[in-house]
Image 1 (tube, protein in one colour):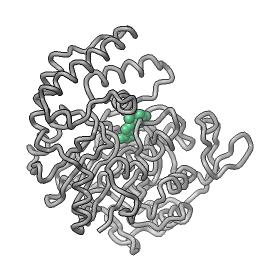
Image 2 (cartoon, rainbow, N blue to C red; image 1 turned 180 degrees about the vertical axis):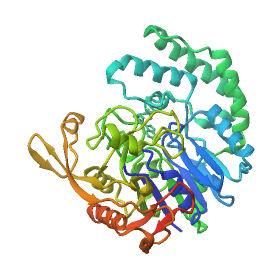
Image 3 (cartoon, rainbow, N blue to C red; image 1 turned 60 degrees about the vertical axis):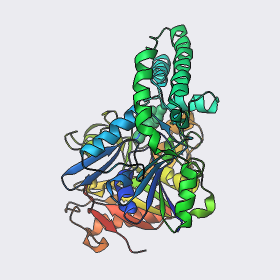
Length: 430
Ligand code: IMP
């Protein structure tokens, strides 16, 4: 059977975790292909809420095999912590269920210190990274000085490489006026994690090939979102990996012919964390209503950093762009319930940039910063949508909204989430 790629169509936080959990019910393997523990994927099952940063959302379904591909940057200590949290919650984590690519790269405490140092040095132009060491780890990867997960198979050599890496990073940190990292305790902690992770290290590309040949459906679970992509996002306000469709192939070691579905996930409105342009951003009462109070896990505060997210109306200019860059075959909309109670809902259908109407996003951040959204207004609804399970269970205005988005995107709608629970999903007939 072929592979499905699941991709965030916006700036991350689209609700990919719950969509991955749904698609995992139709898959045998779920594999993460990019990013690291900067991601925060939430899955709610009954009274349990799982917050995942590295481990694919498929882990909460017992018979699903999960894999971390070569495209990831992995903090081994945080991975072990996440595994232990899941084990404590009753989830089985064994080498039969979880595979870690020997080719994935490792995030070290020196990368985290360098991330912080770079952000401090950027001052007012800070990217607003998650401070998880993502950028510096990918810099070492592309600079061909990184540490790969497979090095943990030889613990002694790993400890030596890690010590050398921290010492070299310390020279850079000291030169820039920042505190060096204490190598001894860091290496001890990483060696302990390496002992735990060794049994899980494998060739993920080979595993996926075997599974696909045996008839398994593989779900490639994206992290972050299209507009944070290193190539296709709002550079430099991006992450350092490729969350887009191409990243799934290079980040897992699979070929394009195995992919038959590319599912774009978009929130019914927009959010962004960190710096960078966001043409439809709202301020004041409307933004506060979208964001929520922060008391619920679904409110718009970062799963990884707790930062309040910037909120605004849905931006079709960006969504159509995401559909093009990724070749989406379908669209899933999330968090429709959050829009209940608005009298009118705006959707940006084009931008005005310096007096010119544009239907595609400009390629520079400078131009995007000048973009004034041109809105189309949809009628709001007051009725509850959380109990809807079929398209005709939605209030007519809510149905008109999601069908309008699907038409504007030029994509068939597969599902709409109407609440945080696993079953709060309206599935549209194919
Ligand atoms: P980094 O990935 O930590 O380097 O952060 C780079 C940018 O991507 C920052 O604006 C972060 O806020 C954003 N970012 C990284 N991961 C996520 C995510 O999972 N959700 C939303 N934004 C993210």
